[in-house]
Amino acid sequence: MIEAHNLSKDYGDKRAVDDLSFTVRPGVVTGFLGPNGSGKSTTIRLILGLDRPTSGEVTVNGKRYRDHPAPLHEVGALLEARSVHSGRSAYNHLLALAQTHGIPRRRVSELIDLVGLRDVARKRAGQFSLGMGQRLGIASALLGDPSTLILDEPVNGLDPEGIHWIRNLLRGAAAEGRTVFVSSHLMSEMSLTADHVIVIGRGRLITDMTVQEFLRQASGKVVLVRSPRATELRELLAGSDVSIAVGDERGLLEVTGLTAAEVGEAAATAGIALHELIPQQASLEEAFMTLTSDDIEYRALAPEGTGQEVAA
Amino acid sequence: MSSVSATTVPPLPHTGKVTQARVFLSEWTKLRSVRSTRWSLLAAVAFTIGIAALACAVVSHHWPHMSLQERADFHPLEPNLAGVQLAQLALGVLGVLVITAEYSTGMIRASMTAVPRRLPVLWGKAVVYGLVTLLLMVPSTLIAFVVGEWIFSGRHINVAFSDPGVARAVIGAALYLTVVGLFGLGLGAIVRNTAGGIATFAGLMFVLPPLMNVLPTSWNNAASPYLPLQAGEAIMSTTPGNHLSPWVGLGLLCGYAAAALAIASVLLVKRDT
Image (tube, rainbow over all chains, first blue to last red; front, side, top):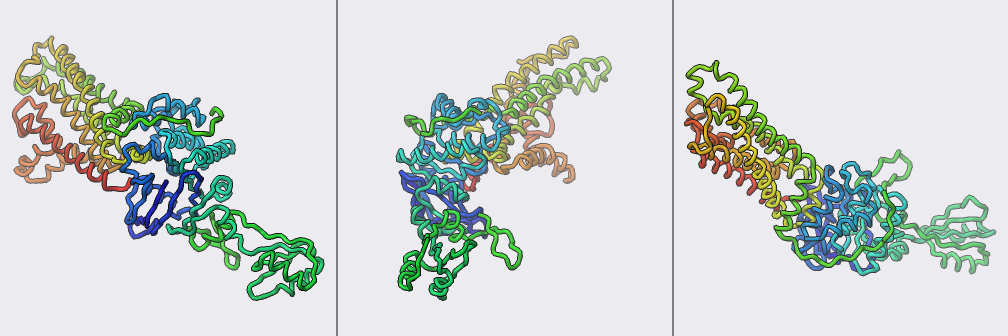
């Protein structure tokens, strides 16, 4: 369980995290979403006590991180930035961390096998690929068998097999009753893994809800409708809040601003037959774009006249 | 890379809390598992013994050609301890690296997540590095002494370990090198950057003394003995001169190292990592 209360962090006169309050509950995978530079990594650093909040407080399992006498048993963390001495082997890196808690050597070997680094465990970590480094980071997060996992962009650099593995690992950990908090800027990844999402933009909380609710809200009212009398239907549905695009195929309309029910009722009243009526569900990616488009700090400058290019 | 199979976290019985003793062990693992440690310590040992042997051999060779005045000014311990000058550079730089390498590689984040109270990490580094240096340098200065005296034995210019001040200077050289290493560690922990840490260390130890020459002579003479290098080297002094008494001088260097570590400890707790 992670609880943030009115958490803020300033770096100089720049506010990285702004009055953030949320709760991450055990038993589910909670996705932590936001565009690059939105304050995800800073929030995670605040949770882990690496940075001090300017105001507010964040606790893990009821205590501030630094007040836990054996933090590796409480929280396993993978940070986005590399946290390994490049000249030390994977084995010795994990051993040095394990020794601070009296965790035995066989646990280190066990985790090296678990993350698939056995063949390179004695190599200097500086020679590791991004994916191998990520596996080492995951091994250190799991070292103390923690009840809470905090992983910042865990799929970065992993191959498809590794992504599949981490996805199962996170879901398995949540099923065991652990608290799993995973940040990502990849919405597609989150839609496969997370049950709950916390979305931030420019350090502020944008939304905190289940993935289903998030999708439902952001889907808005977009309906695909096909009718042999499309031209009549178009005139019938037209209104100030409604925009209608004509599809590529004959008789196909994309109606924005009305629900499927409203379109169906209107067509029935006018006696217009419908051959298809499909409510469009937004992907998590689109939902995220809709929600955060005003909160993106760094965006590519779009040429005049075209829409906004958004880096998500 | 071997393929991965299990997708659940293997269970582990809780092993208790973080203690200073456990952090000592962890810091020992960290120190022994990087190359910079091995090379710097090897260099310090090689300098201490090798340069002593070389300097003693040169003096021994020149002895018949030296004037009476030169012979009168000569003290056999000087070439014996000549290697300390280079060894202190290796040990000071390693002291800086022991902490700054954690910042440059990002390891510090892992260290501070494992030990969020932070100070045990700094004390762990200081104690482990100090002990390792001391345990290596005491035999090294002793070997340097024995080798040097063996070289001098043909010229009958030996001193005995039991002669006044000799044991103090030889063992004191090892103590001096240990404290210099800890001074480097403290400075590195304040600066948190390898290049900056080494520059600060070298500046305070080796650049400051010649800079004092711009001061009026009387000021220079009054202030110089209190600089870290001169104060510490008093423990190895064999002749009277403008320096503090041996133990007071070494004590002052200890004070500099302690002050650097104290400032570092305050900053470590206060600053963001």
